Image (cartoon, rainbow, N blue to C red; front, side, top):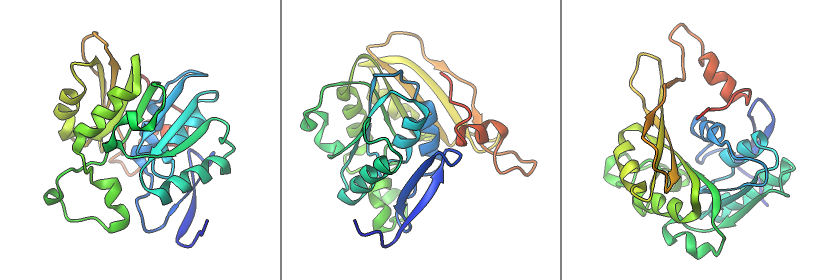
Amino acid sequence: MDHTGISEDRVLGGRVRLRQRADGYRAGMDAALLAAACDSLPAQRVIEPGCGVGGALLAAAARRPGVLFQGVERDPAAAALAAENAALNGFEDRVSILQGDVEAGFRTLALPVFDAVMANPPFFDDPAALRAPAPAKSGAWMADGGLAAWTGFCLKAVREGGTITLIHRADRLADILAGLGPKAGSFRIRPIAPFADAPAKRVIVRAVKTGKAPLVLLPALALHDREGGKHTAEAEAILRGEAALAW
């Protein structure tokens, strides 16, 4: 494919090579945290709707040898880059990419249900809520079908007893819980704060389809240290692939 405007970056402590558009949406902290939250076991199957160029998908594959991953991406150029990135990292035997649209629903993919789903849904579903993003980034920022389309897709994509893991804005936590319940439960919530003394800006939500255990609010992860360090030691270890986000 034409690589004009494509940069190649190293993530997960240099273990993963990632080609992505220089002027488009670029995988960052959210993708790294989502990958770190994946705790699937060898031979289990994980799907990521809206996988983009594979930032979270490939980092999760590097962290979890033997796990089978399926990415779904509606943008054909991003899907092609994701497939290229899978091959670039030697994961083509257990990472597959399929072009598809979350809004159309899981059943349109004609795939069997998965053991787990992980997703980083677009953060906005109201164009009036923010300044319009650049065209190359709009698909990653704007959810045409709303957050409900993503929670609905996830519920259909996973088997009973399987896990759903989402990273999203902290102020949408109530919407996430409402969208996944009552078909999912056993919620575990990890707040993600910019600093230890600041409110959380993100949440990672883990649910079990048909789970019945009480909701658990886990300790927050602080990303930055006010003493001048770029990241806290815990966040740095996660970014480098030296630690996972335990549930």
